Image 1: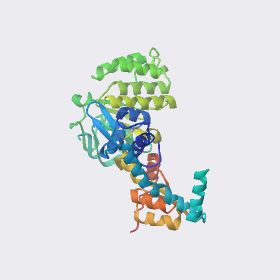
Image 2 (image 1 turned 180 degrees about the vertical axis):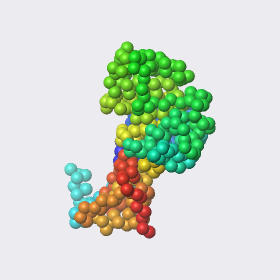
Image 3 (image 1 turned 60 degrees about the vertical axis):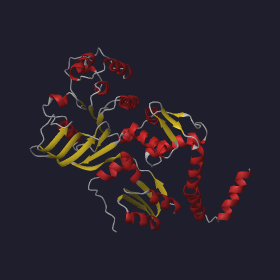
Image 4 (image 1 turned 30 degrees about the vertical axis):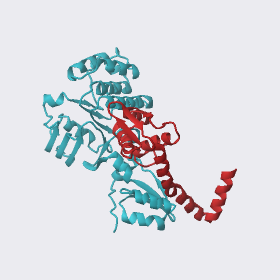
Length: 118
Length: 296
């Protein structure tokens, strides 16, 4: 895994994606730190950092001695966050490239509508 | 967190050469730390000093709070796997592994046997008849099965093929997760181990040029490429590690990129690309290269 950002962020996002696509529903147990580290072939401390971020954000919760679980409402919260980030991460770069190609925002939105309906 | 290995103002001179001058660092307990740098940078010498195998010229080394030199209490907590380890010629691989039992109080015989299978080490063969890779796998097996609280690997993989190296990294990670301990590993194969490391110490020409949390290094480093006019503002306010231009296109590698920079660069349509730890080390230790401080 490598897209240039800290690996612990990518580990967190990997779990988030599993929550978003429903493969880790609310109440489900998430893999242990050591399992995550072995799967991604990363330092366990890095895996812990990634998971702790989700615990701090209330997406996961710990049950002492048992493991970590997906919190109620985690999916909705992630959807909300990802939608907020969508503009910075996708829309703005899209418009920047469109401007380079001399496409107006209307041209782009026409394209999107056409693609969405096909 | 406790410093397990602590070097302060460490200097090592030989008759005509100076290995390093005034090197200071500390490693945290139960972390995996990479010691990176070019050939001749001083990595092996540093490891010899940390393990009490050579005398320091000046400065101090503290391992578990004490001087490691001829200190049995410290040395039995230590396992040093040397790249150039020599074994008595007539000894078989089995005899080498059996003798390890006497040096390492936490030696795990069953685990060692498992590793022998995995690395396909021919136990009955004399060490002098083993290939370079097989000799390296002896070192790797000892380093892992010794379960020493401080394990130091000096380029442990020489002659090991890609499959065996991956097996070593996977085993190291799994065993470290189960039995946390302090691991220091020197290596050239930075890309292969980058994700295993929590800390990286980079030495070049006898000096420490980087010593940081690997995640922090990655978070702060990025390469930005695009029209020079758009890239230049980023270069002006940040530390430029590397700069390359092609016509009106400029690519800069920056050492202290913030999240806001990333968002701004992307919004400006610039390309952001990751810089691997290996690239970062290369940029920092190029001959004659120095950090180009931004003109503010």
